[in-house]
Each structure stands twice: as structure tokens, then as C-alpha cells.
Length: 203
Image (tube, rainbow, N blue to C red; front, side):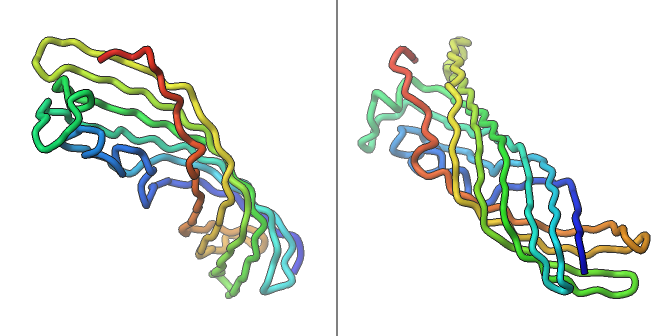
């Protein structure tokens, strides 16, 4: 019982996709194929609170960075109703997407303690902020070397967020432990995280 806290490092793997138009509207964009891998990154977090043993209440703060590279292939084939303004010219497009930001959440933590090993789970609600940057590179598929590179204006968003984690703590002293576990960070950008159209771009 009393004041407690901790901090840790994260390896980040995105699940559920990023909601890009390459993921949701590949064919409608005139592409013959899209490759949209999940983002990967890293982060850090910390928390402190007060426990009445076994239940505690805490504030968790965290930040993370992730990135992905999504690709689209346009073969120039306008058969089957593809919009020729989108499907042509034949080209390969690559989008690099970078996202970083932080999160704060009020959580409840339950702990079961032994002499050498302690287990805990925590969950709560909070607020997340993310800022996103993207770069698009289009290269003609005819071997001519023609290309176009565009760096989009960044866009940020706030989102309600859910934080949850589970960990096993190995005691190294009476007051210190080293832990390993998994964390869930859930948020939704909604429709606000859209890059502004650039009407000056010419393929």
C-alpha cells in the first residue's frame, strides 16, 4: 500500500490498418494492386499512482512513433470501367507515412504479489494526440525515369483513447522490479486526419 510508479520502453506494431485510401479504396483509385503493411515503431511510457493493495489508481503518460511505406501499382489499363484520369499513366507510387504523438490516461491497476514475482493488469480511458507526415513518390513504369515527389502538409488529430496493459514483475529488491508485458493503445483518427488536396500536381 502506498505510492508506486514505473516506466518502460515499447516496441510498437500497428493492428487494424491506418485507414488510408490505399487500404480502403484501392480499385476506386485506379490502382491494379496495393501493398499496405502495418506500421511499426517504438515508444516509451511512465505511470505513477497510489495503491490500496491490491487495487491502485494511476496516471499514465506515453509517447510513440511509428512509420509505414504503402505502395500502389497503376498499370494504365482502363478496361473494366477504371477512370482513365486515375489509372493512367502506368506508374508506381510509394507513400511513406510517419506518425508520432502522445497519450495520457487515468487507469485502475490490480496487482497480485508473491515473494519474487508480481503480476498486474491496468486499464483506463484517456486522450491521445497524433501528428502525421507523408511523402508520395510516383515513378513512370515505362522505364523513362520520369518521377514526381510530393511532401504533404502535416495533419494532427485528437482522439479518445483506451490504454490497457498486463505485466509480470520480477523483484530485484524490496522496492524495485523489472517487468515484461504487453500494452494496448487504441484510438481513432476519424475523418479529420485528411491531407489537403494539392491541385497543382501534374502526373
